[in-house]
Length: 196
Image (tube, rainbow, N blue to C red):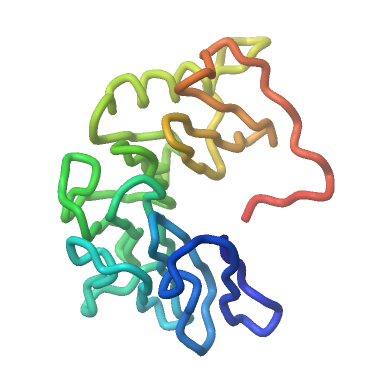
């Protein structure tokens, strides 16, 4: 696990790989952990990764600036949303980690061989990789209002092993995928939480 301190440094704990919990010094604005490696985003938009090197997973492109990162917890790949709002991935290659996915995207999240992007303008979910059709369809269904059947825009997304959750424009948390059906009841986000 990892977090950013009030001093904008990364602090890691847990795990069994020393290199993965030994972040470099300096300021970060975001951090994401994966399978024995992590990546952080510098204030300049530069991505920096550390931990076990597998299939170049700790080598993000040095000539690209990012505004958000996501690391797969179940593989050796990572993706980021560039300043131009495209998604660029590195590490293990596959349909879920395309070298370039044209946007515009506001956010990207990686799960188990499925990557989903939050479209910048429509606020809809676009998924790719294994079972990406099911993931995108379930996202559309899960984004529907329980009262009116209307689609609500997503404000944020996150992925687990085979499921995804999002916060809608109505501040509802909606999940879909493994063990979550499209008819799951949405729940309100407690007042003490904000979309980050």
